[in-house]
Length: 238
Image 1 (cartoon, one colour):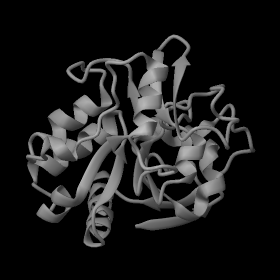
Image 2 (cartoon, rainbow, N blue to C red; image 1 turned 30 degrees about the vertical axis):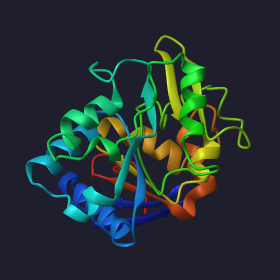
Image 3 (cartoon, rainbow, N blue to C red; image 1 turned 180 degrees about the vertical axis):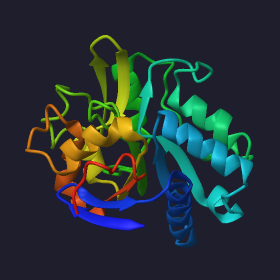
């Protein structure tokens, strides 16, 4: 294991499965303190984590009983769709591990996007993010559904959750920069050589947050941990 201090938070370099085990350790630590909320992410790495955790029954009964499951961002599609982030969490993790419906909190995607974001925010405790927010990092440096050039990026004092239309990709529902600031802890899973340039830009590159939205985490670096495999961290200098 190698640990790097960067302007965007601590980068812990681990093989993929060891990174997944570290995420489980953090879930266990949170659960030991009582009920808590987790915001999961979409993408290939979270799906791999679900398969790994479900196959090995790696989440304890305490985690399963005390966790309220969310996703940090969502596409405006039914949960049955292969494009649904929460749908992937359900099929890959929550159903296989028997998590009751009462512990699941999907976005109300049956509503129009802006109404869905408003409903979701209204059903959350006032001013609350997630106790633990799990993110991924896109090849283009996006986090959650805060894409390069997204108008939500410059609204640090705006709503914690919002709808945004991603050009060419349709409407998304997402935690915002203000919402990330209200999270207790943020863990970003980054795997593969294809993410190396994005991780370097976010953690070591010149300030350019509209081009590299992951740089939003620089303002929150004290509570941000990047769990990156050696390939993803290959462009970072000690």
